[in-house]
Length: 309
Image 1: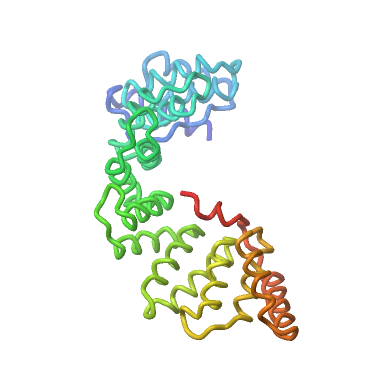
Image 2: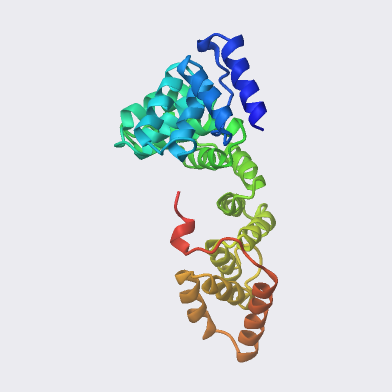
């Protein structure tokens, strides 16, 4: 591994102009071997952007040198100034979150944008967040959607989710529920429970045609642990919005949701119990217990948590 790092760094320095360092190259971790570190340090002193980025990691980790945040940022800045894209991204995040230095949103935008324009997917998602939340700039839904789309097209599940939200609500882009569903499905394909929930919601809006799909996706989100999905399933059966009313199944899902901390489900279950016979309540409780025993959701949340964006 150390030989590979050394060989790559030497090739990066000796075979390419400094300004032509590969934009796609990640920051290599600081080598553990002192002799390899010495060579990296030498290359950094001679101007290798890749080696300078590695020196950043050395000083940040305190490997082969004493940990020194200021020195780490010094090397990271030198690397970023040469257009080393991963360094640009890392420097942007350093300013964005104030890691070792005071947060500076203006500088964060400068460096994150450089990396994003070079195709760095994580920088694109960061930049979308900056414009969405208005960090250092006025909130700009159009720019947020633009950068989320860039990252979504590269396969970022979180960007796919946020782009779909924008398309569903018409924030920064023209409202388009069909395209929103497409991106939600892609995000759900990465296993994002929030995307599974939103797919279910869109299908539920397309009643009666989408009812079966809505129930299937709510169940997927429920298996992922989203209490809101459990509550919505209870509502569907209580109201009969996807077929006939089934208060027993409604109680089952409300009880499951209550077990996962949903205050809405707890209240709905309490209100519904008075409308059912003892036998129905027992069957509902047994069905809820079986589901809970058979399913081990990876995420447990309150209703309000599942509504966060």
